[in-house]
Image 1 (spheres, rainbow, N blue to C red):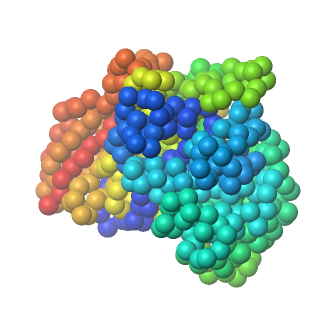
Image 2: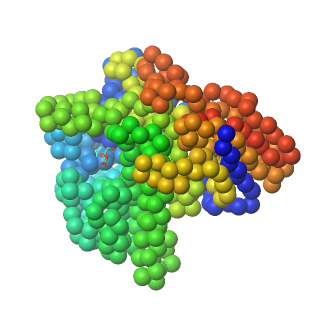
Image 3: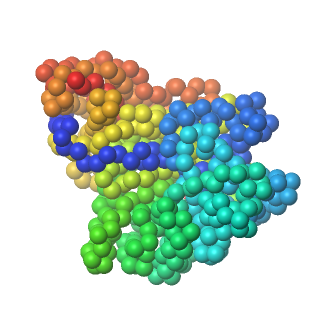
Length: 504
Ligand code: AHR
């Protein structure tokens, strides 16, 4: 048995957690929208054609913000196609995913759906094939109440109240050569700056996300961030980060070490932002919007073949990764990493939410169900609200095929002052060792364990299904002891652990 220990002190606050780190993402891709959140003929469909079973699961997850409508899709999105009477809406070719977009569901429907799920919209504008002018028109449509063309168009469509969408993404992955309308860094930086500047004149309550690198391996990283920020620093509030992980090699130990790369990614982006800040002698702090993250690899090869073979299908099955137990462990590790950086990571979007690399799956005309990754996200979203704490952690380390000094246990804690609850989140990455974990909670006075769950004991490849979406899920545990504010727990090999304690 190996050992680890952590000190949790309520005075060592890093930041108040921005609840938007539990955000997610819906793109017009595959069955995310059609037969995902929207399926008019479904037995659970409401008066708008929204699946109520999906709405219930999204509400259970507690997703405060949802990015829309893409992703790569946004770079050739003509928002005007997606509004107005449905019978007049024209289909268009979606060049990102080589499918046919019917435009049956658009800006107004998404706004309405977000209201029903208690989430805000995070809107992306098309800076691939379109311009500042089109972004301004969309903003006028969404947020203004003036007697001008686009605000009137919204009202005439039956949407009297402006949507007040606050957070806007300046395009998507503009560093990527695959992006329709990809641009060199300086050109994109200038376009993003001018677009944000003009949009802020129209509505000065807005905040903007500048496209950072599409992943840490991009050859232009981190020069892309430096150059674009030198153009846009004064006009934007966040830099985006995107990262997906995979285990093609079937190397669980190394896969679970991926959050070391994530740490490096976050650290480098913070350093680059702060370098430009210093260079500009600016007082303004720019933060991080990790607006696409997840495991994504199970279906990549077959999806690429399908898009090449059968283009221009309507809502085909694409990116429908079925997640297993080790994917859930990595999702838990990623959430722990975001909590550790809660002072700078202010928005994060699990990509995506329904059917497309998603925690929630649906069967056409059938049930909605929870994937393995649903559970760590649910528990972090539920118990990870309040103050992020800096928690010194010591313990055994191991090496993997591509990483050294990987801690057996990664863990952190969150203090919810309102509920007087402190929650410890921990993953034991070790494939073989149970870890004897000791946690010093003395600063919280007389603590009691009110909930202890563990997700453990599964084969790394175990999955959930429509027939059983609790096959791989957290189970209650009582394998802990408390003595004078010192919590001792055994973390099983390969486990996701959540311990909620009430404080005085
Ligand atoms: O989430 C799937 C895709 O991944 C998004 O469209 C794109 O932004 C990223 O490459």
